[in-house]
Length: 313
Image (cartoon, rainbow, N blue to C red; front, side, top):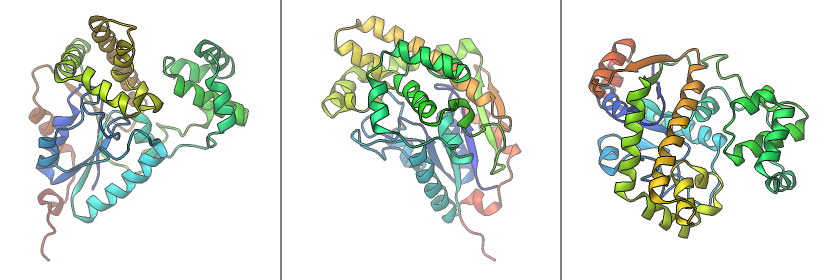
């Protein structure tokens, strides 16, 4: 075994577990997070600190500017490259994150969805979100039920595919639970609902203490609002509205907590569909070391990977 995947909802504690696991096994971390790829989106994405990156090398963090597009296909390409390089150093790649679509893109592919059509995309972008959702519900109820209905970008993409192909978007996505092509250890961390919500609330409050409002204001000067993906990220989206005078700071903080809890629930729904994943239930008093201790006996790592050095013959 030369690859480990570690997933779970936001604030569950993945990052510290991945750090300790990497140090124990001689590994390097590949971030599977659709927002940590952007330079400057630091506080709102809980990006690993410089101290953490010095402890263990991290990949696919800060690989795109705000004026660039970044999608699952690009992630899969860069992740394959990072994994190959890590293994070439006789190290263990540890994939860690909460973006289910990126895991799927890497392991299963992205299905047969066509490339974007600029004319159709522009037309859909002029339509009210309510009209888009009504059309999606009529043409693809399954996708309407599962999609983030408050994210116009995803709704538009689903409808774009439907209109271009004449087939439901849900039929064209690669089957997430069909197979685990790499047959790799895949662990999903979870916590009891009350405990996870407490951790989410604490994380959101810490982000504001660290300067999320100021970070967002600076990012707006660098083009955040023009990046359809990054500007829709939970936290940044609500702070942008706050800076435009739409919500008070108190209401913004409360809204981000609510949105983050809802997002965590959607993440777990996604990962539970992946039948090859093993769920690790973390108790409130468990440390990251406890979780690593529960995971490592289930791994088969060659001795040279444990040390990070090739054994002499």
